[in-house]
Image 1 (cartoon, rainbow, N blue to C red):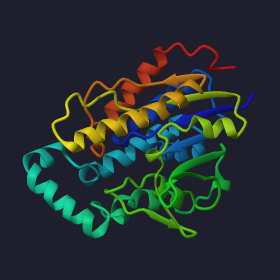
Image 2: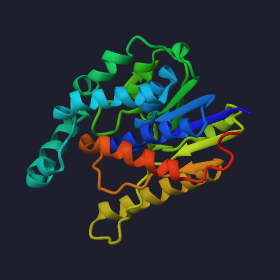
Image 3: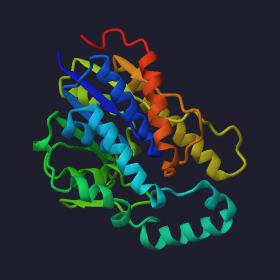
Image 4: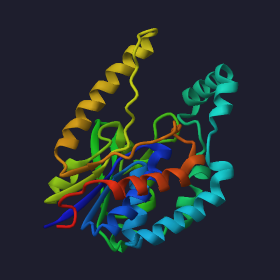
Length: 272
């Protein structure tokens, strides 16, 4: 039996992956293959290199404590100056294709992961990004892990897309935020997927943007439900707090909560 772990995207909620992995390992589940997208790609890469949930947990804590001062975009800032912030962000994106300086934001990744290649992992690892030129999924499974993560985590409008062999690559979650089908195509026979998608929905159509948002949500949900149906076990950590995409201030709490919650889950068959 070839067991796979699929880690979905979810921005700052990705800290939940660390808690889930720790609980799964304690229950006897160690994957033969890890596939991640966006923040799930980052956690998956680290776990594939370490192959130890306790080390992953401790390293995540240390990095969070060092980076917390500058890593988050606080909700209060955006809310207090919402109209000004939005206008500046829109102008910036129109001009430079990104709001955040990628080099600074990915500094920690560069420091810890730049020297690693996919061939260096203790657990086989893959991650996905979106080919913007053709709206197709790109599967990263060789070469530099750091460069692959840059592509998989390149959220449109926030980070500049990555260029690779004439292709423009951005966040893998644009097309598929829980790529169970990727591990099935890699002949995995038992799949545990961790879904961090939000359950919030737009309930009114006050603007044309809200209509487009609902259309996008339904399209994304259709893909998500297809992928969920293809997994053997799906873990969806319940978030007890509202977490913005890039607000990592609750990282440690999210890790602890997802760990405790996963320990309580009925994971029949997970240790087979």
